Every structure is written in structure tokens, then in C-alpha cells.
Image (cartoon, rainbow, N blue to C red; front, side, top):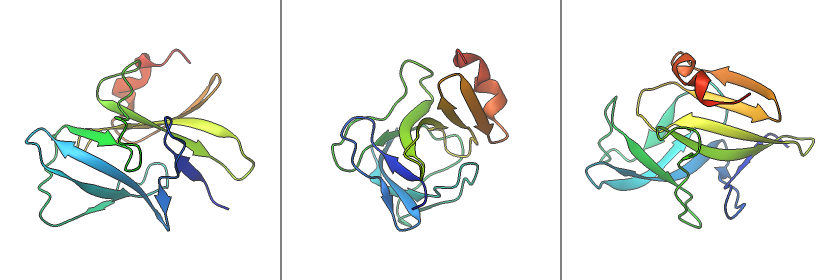
Length: 129
């Protein structure tokens, strides 16, 4: 079993095959699904060709099952949060940017933090780790 990703609200699995699936909404009220890589630090994603996303666009990210907004309000309004469960059953908080083209990911468990992405340094002070 590889890492699984679950919604922090309904605990539903967000991973399908080799992608994590999110429902999104843009500032212009476009809605759609995006599939992102489950590998931390890999910022490739897939979307429907009609979904117009440009670098710098701010997204809202939702669980596709319970429709909860995944925004990490208590950390930073540009970040969303999911839970990663590894093969041993350990759980980690995963924070990632909702800004298209911004490469930011944090993996946190207790007082340990790993950061991924060229833009992560600008967010490091938002975590009390």
C-alpha cells in the first residue's frame, strides 16, 4: 500500500489510482475536478481542457465527497489541508498552496516538518513547529 490521502472532515479517500482528486472553484466561479500527483513535491496536475487555470489564480479546494472546503484557515488563507496515511498507518497533515503555479507543500506530524517546493520558504513562519 502506498500513501493514502483522506479528507480531514469525512475521512473519505481522495486517491484514485495514481492521482489525488479534488473539486475546485476559481475566483470566476468556474468549477471542475483536478487530479494531482500523490508524490510530495511533484506539482503536475491534470484537468479538463475547458477549465481555464493560469499561474497566480487563487482556487478554492473541496473534498469531492463531502464538499467540505479544505482551506487551512488556522494556518494561512493560501493553503489547503488533507491527511496523508503512510503504509504503517501513521498520519501526517499535508498543507499545499491553492495558488496555481505556487509550489508549496508541508508534511507535518507532531513537532516534525518537511517542506517541499521552491515557494515554501515564504510560508515557514506560519507553522509553530
